[in-house]
Image (cartoon, helix red, strand yellow):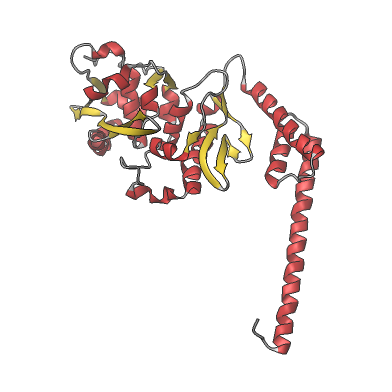
Length: 348
């Protein structure tokens, strides 16, 4: 039984979340994810010795840790508690040549009474909650709670799965990512309120790119993760069959005391410059606008402003050439219109 008197003022440093829960199909709002995270942060394997554990949080704790109004916590939690009590999680079940999801309620009961929130997790998920034989994500609790968007929280959990020697996270199938982000129903179809995500580009922008943008700008997480730039955008590489995007690879490093962000940024800038300049100097393929923009940014990252300005000048000249061509094209069409007025419109 979890003792309400323990950790009254101390927030656990980390949320230790098992591999199966990290790579599961779940759909939690940002506030629901925060409450679920608080429970996992306080959970220990020996809590499950005997009967189901109970995790209790006072209104004062919830106000302090989640930024809620202490005087009106009940009204703020009413809908959240109602939804949490029915939320399910889809655990991947590997099958020969395929994989399936088994959906199970997260909680046996969720109660808010006398300014105390009580969470009783579902016994059917006890193994997924406390067994770490497949590894786990060690998630910074304060960083996780400070993130605003539910999709950002999910991505932060996934990226926290591997924290040593860069990333060992393999490219993730688009449909699996949609499941992990709570976009799909149990049968794999799009949820009614998520139909805009049918477009892969919309899904990538709203669930992935905007999440990386938040992680890169948040005061805490931007000191923990460095995302690498690529031709596909910050922190991602798109895997394609022709024009079809079938998977996303995340490009990032965790920042450590032995490898501070300044050193990592310098090394990344050098690699980027070497790659782009080698293409420019050894092939006849012109650099794209995105490559030129990235090249200028990389030169500025290592204080090579003169080279960066030279790249900026090349970009400006290219843009001017396009504008001139547009004007010439328009002038040509204007002359055609005048000729048609003089001689009458004739069918093609």
